[in-house]
Image (tube, rainbow, N blue to C red; front, side, top):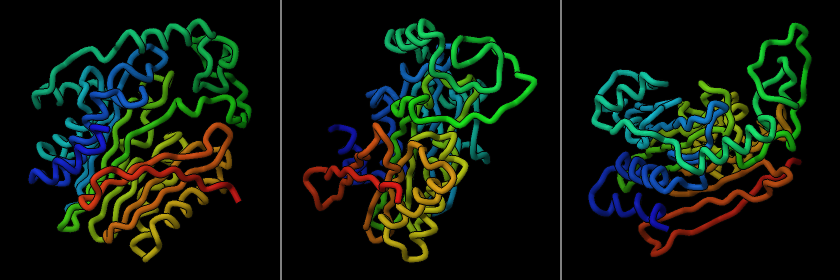
Length: 311
């Protein structure tokens, strides 16, 4: 349970809300939470692990983010340095790694025996599943390299084509005593993704969003779908209008359902009064979404599970 206590302990020791989010997400990167955060997880179709992260200050509306980060383990730490030492918001790829090294982060291999094993099994299964479509050879039956198919056809993706555990993220919202709201995310993205792919996690308003006048939110799931709807931003705007956090999360999920009924995803929300809630899209294999809440008034974190079924 160490990760759940770190943000609260950080605040109790006089650290800022930014410190709390950075240290909380950073511990998850070290622990390689669920294999979907940090080094050694979710190898892309070249076998390489890359990282995405973001952190947002709800007082200043500043965002620091990195995507497709290579050879640097502490993605959330690098994201914060983007806020502190640049006038940019998002750095990507090998150039983000070079920035990280300039900021003092070690340049190291993110591959582990586990990630090599996952990659090897995938190759032995004819590279199934993958993220290609309308290519030759047939991506549903064999590995690449692929070339574009001259005649493009519409292909509706089914839930069974993708493992719902292929996507996950640590999302965190911290609200301090002064009312400062900070949010952050960290992930190693979708397993077997096409190299260069960036999901929702490092995108402000998609992966997470914070505004100290309204609240904060964070999302997880299929980032390629989620990022099209900016669910975290939308949830915060609902809360700004007085919507209860749980209802705000449900409304966001419902909006995505209208366009992509079978998507895999969930959202957590917290407003400036300390009220909170969450919702997820209920699909086969994903009927409950687990999240945790910690308050200085509690001696232990509270764990919840919730889902918002399709109506």
